[in-house]
Image (tube, rainbow over all chains, first blue to last red; front, side, top):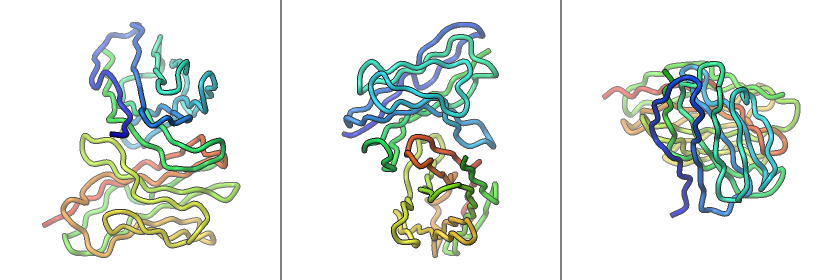
Length: 115
Length: 113
């Protein structure tokens, strides 16, 4: 089954603790992206990657890092995120090359709570 | 830069009546526009997309949207609401490279029996 998977689905952590949320897709997509969803704000893009070793900032990259060492994986790293990282995070991927606007396929989401 | 404004944060309709969810966009080039739906505690699913072909776009589950360049609008409609349509709907615009998506704030649709 074609899908985007994220792990963990739920995570409670404390301020200042580094953590990684994994994202994997089995559709051989070149493009992958991370979003955070906050009430009343919709989804905002954190980082995206157009291919292995090619990443770029979205609208809210502060406090996050990403890496793309393999085509199928695009982990999101929270080191000392600021402002409040408590949010719902979605990973997405899409097919097509540069400039294509095919639909993005979203993972199930990771709910992160930072205390 | 692009932006999206969803004009209603909440819409309530009775089952069997028409649905209208309004979206205005701003873009400095010919946009690609999407509507996504998110059911409670679920991920996002694509309803339909506009990519400069026909201005009336048909999607899944009986939804459709009309691209109106003169009004910079991309409103989502459905002739007859079903209880299963209750969800949050997002209007989305893509940059010209297909890499950056800008989401509207969302419209929560409530369907009354």
